[in-house]
Length: 515
Length: 42
Image (cartoon, rainbow over all chains, first blue to last red; front, side, top):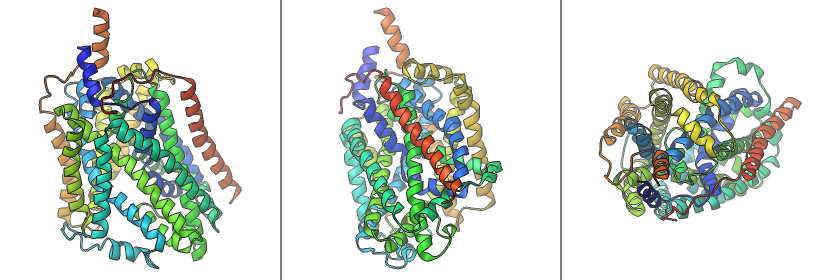
C-alpha cells in the first residue's frame, strides 16, 4: 500500500526544495491585488491606523487559514479534490468547487495580464496621449455596449494568445521545471523591478505628499466596522487562501518539511510586498496630485483605474515616465503570470489525480479550453464587461463562500483541525496551540461570514454596475452557483482503482508497524 | 510628511519587513528534511 502511495507521489511530481516551494507560494500570493488594491484600501480605511486591523487580520485569520491549507495539502498529498477526499469521503465536492472557481478565475485573469503587457509597450511612446481613460475604453479596448459579443480586438487578442502560450508552456514543463524554475527566476525579478519603481517614485516631486496621505493615521477609523471588514477582506483576498492553490502547492513539498515556518515567510513576504506597493503607488499619486495642483484624494484610485488610467497619466508627467511605465506594467505582468500559473495548476493537478492523466495531457486538456474561452469572451469589445462582472461575483460568492464552507466543514463537520495541527507541529519550527483551532473554527469563519453577508445584502439591494439583469444573472450569480453545483457533480465520478484514497500518513504508519 | 505619518510608516516597515526578516531567519535556523526523490516531472 505504501509503495502504491510512493508511486502516486512520483507520478504527481514536486518542488525540488522548500525554497522553491516558498518562492512559488509567494509568487501565487503576490498578485495584481497587492499592487493595485492594498494601497487604496489602506488609504481609504484609516491610513496609517489601518496597520493595526491589518495586522490583527493577518495574525488571526490570514496566517491560520494559510496554515490550514498547507496542513490539508501536505498531510493528504493531493490536489484539492483528492486532499478533501482523503480527509473525508463526503468532502470531495469542496475540492471540486475550488477547482471550478480556479478555472473561472484563470479565464479572465489572463486578460488583465495581456492588457498590462500591451501597456508596458505603450509606455515607450505614451500611446495613450493626453486622455488615458478615453484611450483605454475607446482606442484600446474598443468597448461597446455591455453584452457578450464576438467582435475581436486584435490589440487584446494577440497579447492574450501569447500569455496563454507562455502559461501553457510552463504548465507542460511541470511542477519543478515549469512553476518552480519560473518562480525562482520571476520572483526576484519582481522584487527588484518593484523596488526600482519605488526608488524612482520617491524621487518625484510631491512623493512625500502622497506618503503623508497614505500614512497619516485616522484613529477614529478603528471604531468603524467597515474598516475591520476591509482589513480581513484584504488579507483574505491577498493571500490566495481558501480556493485550492495552497493545498495543491503544499502537496508538492517533501513530507518532512517545516510548513509553519514556510507559512510565516510567505505571509510576511506577501504583506511586506503590499507595503512596498503602497509606498510606490502613493509616492507616484502624490507626484500626480502635485503636478495637477489638486489634493491626493482627487487622484487616488484602485484596480483597473489605477493601473490603466492613473499610472499612464503619471507616466505622461514624470521625468522618467517610460521607465516608470515599464517597471510598473512589467511588475504587473510578472506578478500576474506567477499567480495565474498557480490558479491553473489547481485545475491541472485535480485532473491528473482524478483521471490519472499525464502532465502534458492534463495541461492541454485544461489549458486549451481555458485559453479558448478566455480569448472568445475577453478578447472582444465586450470583454471588459465580462471581466468586471465575473471578477466581482466569483470573488465574493465563489471564493468567500467556499472558504467559509471548507473551514466550517473541516473544523465542525469532519473535525480535522486537531489532526492537521498535530501534523503541522510534527516538523514545524513554529508550534500551533489550541488557539489555532479556535481561530480556524470560529474567528476566521465569523469574519468571512460577516463580510459575505454584507456583500450579499449590498448586491441584492443595489444590482452591481449598470449591467443588464441577464448579464448579472448568468455571468454573476449563475456562474457562482454553477461552479458549486458542478463541483459536487464531479465529486460523484469514481476514482481509478489504482488511486490510493486513504490517509497517506496512516498508511505509512501501518506499513512501518507491519514491516 | 507629518511626524505622525513618518512614525506610522516606520512602524509598518518594522512590523512587516521585520516580521519577514525574522521569519526567514527562523526557517534558516530550523532545517527540516528536504524532499526525497519523488519527482517524475522535474
